[in-house]
Image (cartoon, rainbow, N blue to C red; front, side, top):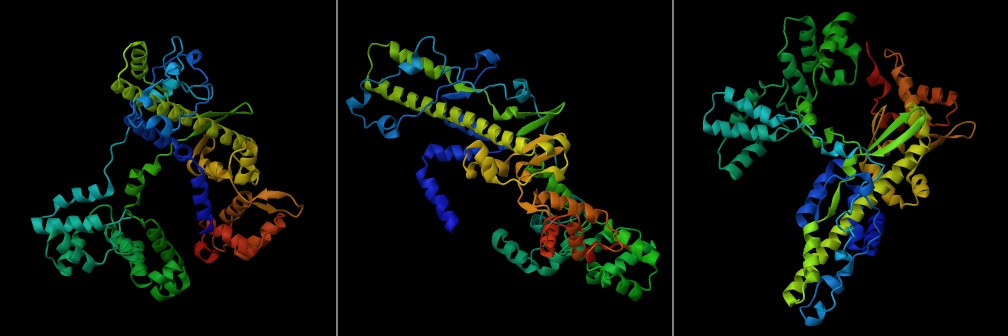
Length: 495
C-alpha cells in the first residue's frame, strides 16, 4: 500500500505530457505501430514522411509546448486573437517543421521497416472444435447446447465448469431448457473430437480419453490404462514399487506402461492456444551483433518511424500569414492549427526521446554483461540490479524498470527479455560477488547430469555447490530449484 501511495504522489508531480511519455516508453516495439496509428488518427497535423537521404535529416531543437490556458482555450474575446505569432511555423526556407524527421545512424536500413510481413492464417482452438460439430447429427436445440459446451472449454482443452451452472446459463442467457443428463450426453460426443483428450474435466480423464484411442490389445497401453484408472495418485507421486506389486508387473512391463503415459498430452488445447496468442510472436527491440569481438548495437527500425508535420497544415498558416484581412473565424482556425502542430511536435519529440532512452539503457546493459554477449555463457553474467543501470545512464530506476520489463534483444545466442540480465548477487568463499543466475545455471547442469534412478536431493545439491565455493543454504537451493520449475528428487526419479 505504501509503494502504491508513493507512485501516486510521483504521478501527481508529473505533467500530463510527462505521464504520456512514461506510458510511451513502456510500449514494446510490437505495439508501437498501433500507438502511432492512434496518434495519426487523432491529429491530422501529424503524418508519415516520405523517404529521404540521411543528409536531409536534421537534429531538432528542444521544443516546449505552450501552456494550454494561454493558447489552446481562447474565451472568444477579440483580445485572444490579437498578435498571433506564427513566424516559427511559416518562415521561408525553414524546413524544420516539414522535415521534422527522426532518422539517425543507430537504426538499420529504413527500407527494412517497409517490407511486408507475412501473416499466418490460423484456426483457433474453439473454431477447430466448432468445425467438427457438423459431423454430429444434432437438431437446433442440441447444436446450441453443444456450442455452449465448446465455448466453456478453456484454452488448455478442459471443461472445468459445473454442469449445473451450464444448465442455469443456458436457461437465463439463451432461454434454452435442458438437463444435466442431456449436457453430459453431448459432452461424451465432444470428447470424441480432435485433439484427443479434449473436453475432459481433469487430468486423469484427459489422459484416459487419449489412451482409449490407442490399441487396447497392446500390453503397454492396457497396463497404462489400468495404472491411470486405479493408481493415478500413486503414479503422480512416483510410487512405482506399489503399482508394480499391485498389478504384478515386471520391470520391463512397468517401463512400457509409463512410456505410453508420458507420450500423452496433458493440455490437448495447448498447441492451439500457443500458436494463436500474440505473445508467441516476439519482435526484438534491439539487435546485438558480435563483429570480430566488437559488439554492435542497433535499435529495431520500427522504433524509428519517419514522422513529420503535415505540409498542408504549414501551408494553411502561410496563407493566413500572407492575407491582409484576418477575421475572428480565421484566427480561431489558426489557433486550432497551431495546437495540432504543437501536439504533433511533442509526439515526435517523445518518440525520439523514447529511442534514445532505449538505446542508452540497452548499451549500458550490453557493456555490463559484455562477456555474456560475446560467449553466450550464463555463468559469465555479473550480478546486476536496476540501480546499476540507472546510475550508469543517469535515468530514474522506474524508467529502467519500464524498459527492462517489456523489451527484447536478439543475439546470436537467442532472443532474451531484458529482465533476463538482471539478478541479485551471491558470495563465494573468496568473497567474490557472483550472479544468482550463474548459480542457477550450475544447479540446472548438476540436475541434468544426475543419475535419474537416484536423483540428487536438495541436501546433496547444496553440498556440491558449497564444494564449488558458493556460500549457499539448502533452503536457497530449494528456492532456486523451484524458480527453475524443477521438481523435488522423488518426482525426478525414472526407471
